[in-house]
Image 1: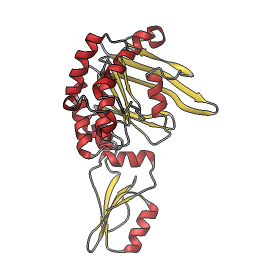
Image 2 (image 1 turned 90 degrees about the vertical axis):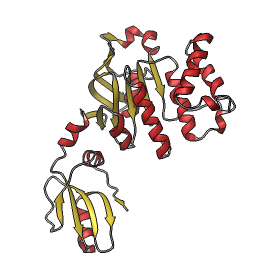
Image 3 (image 1 turned 45 degrees about the vertical axis):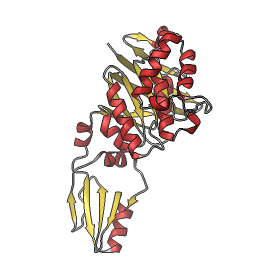
Length: 295
């Protein structure tokens, strides 16, 4: 069994509720944690990894409170924070040896595990190279490897693909899919395509509370009839649409402009037609972004 229950979890800083009565149950698989900056995602992850104490509520792992499990719970956690620091003069292999020692692995177990992980993240051939000479994507892969050293049952990743190019993001998604069979993986990111590709469920957080939790098909089903394409060759009309609707993006052609619009009702324009929603539309709809994207 691999089950994590979060019950009535609340974290208060002064007058601010960073997390407000969160109730979710997680089992093996990848969960996308989605929300704007300041929504409470990192606070939730830090409570799951025991880095901060809840103000109220409980976290239960396999029917036992993690406070009672104490060190036994921390031993099955892997964590990659958003700001992951390395000793840049260390080789990748020596850095992982250092982290393994901090995690209490024996030298024999650490040596075997480190070789396995360096192969897994595609860094075995450069294992003796100084981490300071690695690209940003390679350093993130070192971060994944250190989080996996203790073969965690719960893996928490905070913005793991931030700053990575598309090739590195694809490599990361494949890696996470590969290791997710027997682990609970919580993935926080602003890159919606990462969640679309690998998460079995998405947890949406707004103002410290869970707004929605579900599989992508059901979330997208709730957006049916709310996404429209509007084509117009009148710049005044285009400006009016931008002022009155949530516009996900704008494409400019030679003779006309096409706007992707979110609305509860069909906009009253001649060039409008309903279109299939995407996950980007979900984010725009629930988190009320102000910026549009023009291409």
